Image (cartoon, rainbow, N blue to C red; front, side, top):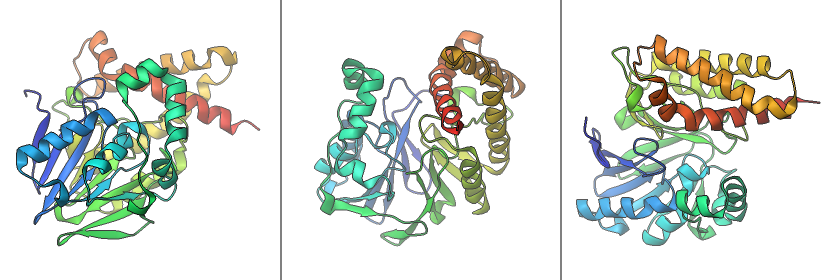
Length: 318
């Protein structure tokens, strides 16, 4: 299928590619309902013009956007919040209780990302992070809901990937906007066996037991589809979800087996073990990409997931 920046889905939902790093890595979503709109996930600050261009293309007045909803405050999901809120005068930011302060004052988020990437790469990948007026922020507790016209959106606290993470249940589509809780599933890895899903353990708050509980909680809602940030709509999620639970356990075993040895080589050991594991699982799933193509598809996540597993191991030490 030819790549599309904007892809119309059923139920008044449009998938938007955020243009982060490369195509089909990260998505956000426009939801339209009876003249009101919500934007779920924002991508980075560099994504803001892409979202606004879609509104213009559809003839949607910017005042019609009622809500901006990042699932959590990692910058590939929420980096564009401040810039978007500036451009959408009637929008309210709906945010997890643990994430609100970072949107009002994003200096720690920005400093942390700059420390990891350096100023030049931070500017290239993320652009900037702009504060949001506290008066435009609404905290969503577990079980809270809002109405978009006559369409209810229900918020569920889903820790495990991050402690500041919620997922958004949309009964109208029988779908859930899962952020990173339901893992990653890239279009290039879909086979006749369906989507290839994998957990994401990005640093610094990976916690396997809460993550499995969160996945089970989503599956208990009996959704017919998931809207993943990484990447796109995934239908019939029960079986992929069960596989995902098993892979979380596999990640833990893999990390524990890599832990013994010199501390300086731990990240390298984790990356090697995770690459071998994921490439093997992809082959078992019917993925026929070459090793170099698999590396291009998964290398970014293998590095980040290994960093997350390393932090998890270190946090478990007495």
